Image (cartoon, rainbow, N blue to C red; front, side, top):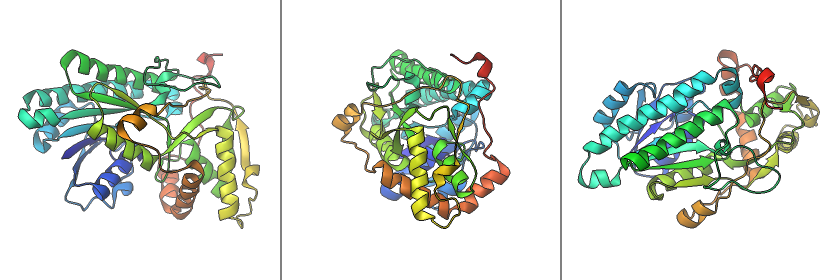
Length: 357
């Protein structure tokens, strides 16, 4: 089995590749343009394995896609390449449309051309798994869960671009009989996550004794799943999911953003009692809210649990402790990111004048 993975040097993609190389006999082709959030160091352990190969190219480059499909002859596609940070999408939506919508369409067309040329068992086994987000469903009130039948109501340029990509994947399946399926996942966390996201930013700022920003009142609620649990879910969906179906993935760990940051501070109080910043909760700083900030995301994961027997294996508190320890032990990585790429500055306020009330 040879898996063609787009965006494999990103946070989730690299976790999937590490899992495949460690736990299966499959081989991997990593197709990635190495944008600002890519992290080749996260794949250092796999780079010398003969089952791993890397192709640097942009997802919108149909010519490069055709060349790699022709040369590598993959068994299946796991599509993870995307721009993902909501705040960045507010500052620059066009880049999200280009990668997430145009890039997905380019990949779909090249993969469909490749699929149409396959015969026999190769054609029977080929499948295309598109990885998406719960944010396409919009915002929940205090009750209820998103299901696979929830209507699409994206509220940010990022979620709108992912919703568009989802619709194109579904259309290729229905119109062309293309063997595709989709998964939508809640918030991920774990080692190697780029520091612009809530959990790594909070950990790093706390370690450096800097203010820890929390948007608005901190009451927005997210469900959290460890990236390694998500990687296992993606593998099960890719291999055993029903074509044409959508699967929701979640951790069944709902917390407000303020509760998440307070938990990080409590972990650091125990792990780093001599930092001079105990209690670390004193660093929490409430800041202007994100424009159009969705109130709550939460998934009903009954379908993937029933059909594919997948359940998250890590509870949030133990997973968070492991994540905090990882950032404490890997300062050289995130300090290099801070120096060269992202200094922890606030993003996503350029749309304030047009934000919904």
